[in-house]
Image 1 (tube, rainbow, N blue to C red):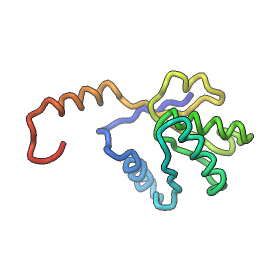
Image 2 (cartoon, helix red, strand yellow):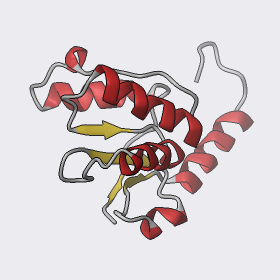
Image 3 (cartoon, rainbow, N blue to C red):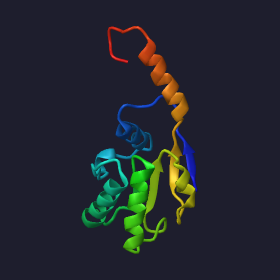
Length: 132
C-alpha cells in the first residue's frame, strides 16, 4: 500500500486542493472529469461505471474517501480492468482495510486527530466578526 501524508491546513472543498495541485503542476483541472456521487462504497461503484462508460481514456481516479475507492476497485476488478496497470486509484482516509486489498489501495492519510483538535479549538473560541 502507498500512503501519502496530507500536510497543511484542511480545506473546506477537497476539490479546491486538487485543483491547486494541478495548477502547481502546470495542468488545467478544467480538463478533468468530475463525477459527483455519494461518499459511499455504492457511490464509488456508480462513479466507476460512469467513468468507464463516459471517459474510457481515464488512467487515474482520485476518490474523495477510501470507501468510494474500494467501490471503484470492486467495479474495475469485476470488469477485468488492470489496476494499477490501466487505471490507478487513490483514496483519502487511510482506512485499516486499505492494506488488505489486492491490489492494495493508494491512500492519503489525513491528520484526523489534529484536525479534530483544531475544530474543537475553533468551536470553543468566542464568536468572531467573520466566519472561521
